[in-house]
Length: 386
Image (tube, rainbow, N blue to C red; front, side, top):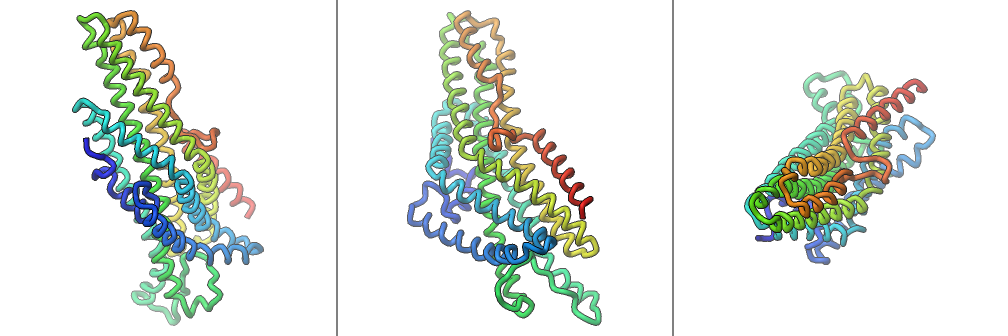
């Protein structure tokens, strides 16, 4: 069949990765140009904040205000360079997807994989729109005092709001609009690697789940062709199932080894950012615009951690169902040889596929709940010491 990597299922992520210079099938020259442009824009907005952070180490409130945005920079850089350094691995994962699409023979299998790919496309669109919607609220905070001066004027202008603490070595009040314009032009680029590499990860996970569903359907129907035969047809189908399971397990191990360190750093960073952003909401409790700014940032960080955990959870659930599908295959009607071939499949599916953060934190909804409880504990501790 046609090259599915060029299909509509992956179009938004494909084009975003091309613009960031990270699409492995784009010419090296174009990749280098777009990489340099992306890194220049991200660095141009991160340096002023890092400078302010370094100058204000003695002021705990300024440091706490800088940390959430610093977490965003760290997340963006981590995701960008993780995939840049694993360029060949990313290409291998995409080529494996293309091979799986090409090897599908029956319409039922094709429709199953299309179903999961379409679901991934819709969920990725929702994720991107949600994050950029929260980013819009965050970016809109500086406009609130200006609008209030127009609608509810005071005898003096309200204080101007900066998106976050920066140091440009100029009079920031005099050049306020240029500074805010610079942030408006670059912050959306900063969040590009965060959003679209999450989308790419979702594509990998959804493809794996689709292949698990195909394997399940084959196992559940393997007895049908063997009901009146000598058992050879069922053995051939089980051999195909075993090969398919091997490919799935190798694919997940390859993906997990690529991003396990990244997820370890991101989980720790997310817990820190959520805790400190919550503290800033309490500290800025009397300022509506500041509450909106930090609350939107906090919700976005929680949603980002939830998304990654949910992707890992769907993989666990889908791979667990392979073990159960063996019981639904009416294995007792199969020949002894076919029954023996089922045993390795059952043994390998007894432990579900998992994506971990540093081999010590499983990306799942259960782990997400534990992370949120830990965040609340840290938040309560910090609040009590202030």
